[in-house]
Image: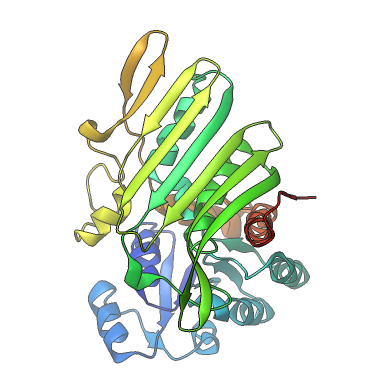
Length: 340
């Protein structure tokens, strides 16, 4: 089946193209980019794949699905146009600036009879996959609490504007990770680190407390301008705890020039950085699971070709936007926000 990329910036190049290439069931039909530099980069990364000027030109090449990787403020228009043209759509995160727009796009997909999903690829992060195995094994008993922290030393990449901010960006991933592990969220408390950039108040950091309907309490946090680069994932349960400080394994490998289609033992952390399980029997390292963002595209193909369930359901993606909406409201009004 044929798939096209709309946009070829850092995300298109590093988080989408290599993982589509790693799934032989997909043929890359073309990429939308007008930049001469991006077109040269495309020729180097995917020889023979044509570059076109816009979404309609891409669809005219003949595609089953398109991936929208352009900036957030362009998301709605491009998703709606692609659905109207009759193709399946993958939207990058943040899915929408608010839940109302997310529901509008979901309704358009239903009306068009086409699949719409969101690239919450960090469900397949190495640390999260390992933590999911710890939970599935019952190693810590009944889960009680979790902390999920992802600090970045990238002040120059903070996006500004009404559709931007770190909460909607990286926060979408961290929230999705926690709902993926512990289920829907009933209420939210949040704090935002607000800074003024180019005349806009934008969140450069956040802490969000999620009260899951399952009874688990999780906290997600991140920063981008504080010159701190660390990851931390901690789980507490009735029989013990699990701690992890694994790196962003797949992204690090991509930036080293490795490729998921050819690298050996893709997506595993080195033993010296494995997480640690703490129980009455003592502390022991837990071998790294294999993270693999290509799984998103394998499952997308199965959904389009065979009618299998999507890896990221629209209701889940909308709930993530509802949570980030609630977090922003909680921070700005200084109160707990309950979700329906």
